[in-house]
Amino acid sequence: MNLNRVPVRQWKHREFEGVDPWAGGRPVRWSIVTFRIVAEWAVSRTVQDQQMVRSESNGIPKKYAIGLYGETTGRYRILPSALARVWREGRVPDHDLPGLLYQEETALRRKNDTPGPLSGWALSQALAIGATALAIFGYYLYMLTLSSEGLRG
Image (cartoon, rainbow, N blue to C red; front, side, top):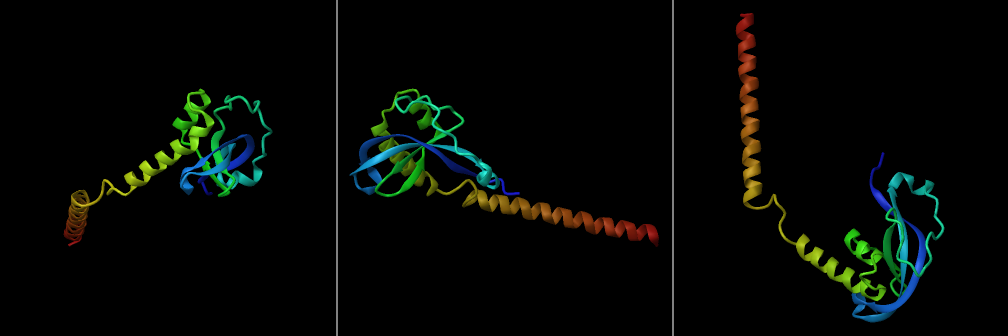
């Protein structure tokens, strides 16, 4: 069974005018959209919910993920939970969301370009430990075979 979780669009909460930082600051009409995050196998069984709160409110229940939709690109982007939380609290206005999300994505791309924990020296150490463990296990099996032959003979 596939346990991947995917977003399922629920409703368009409201719209606002802003700029698209992914398109060089071009003006665009944005929509704030809600999603339910469900197991991939459950997508076809997921019922689309009706809008649960007035569009003027940021009080969308936490069971829903918050996303943005840019009309010019036709692309959905889901907000990280921390950004969705401060938006729900009213500490971030709608028109700031695209820029903040763009900054977060840029920081993640830079972070993802750095070597992981098992690169360079750490990788060579992990391989050496694995080879040593394999050699010890092989020696153990060899000694076990010798001792069992000695008992038979």
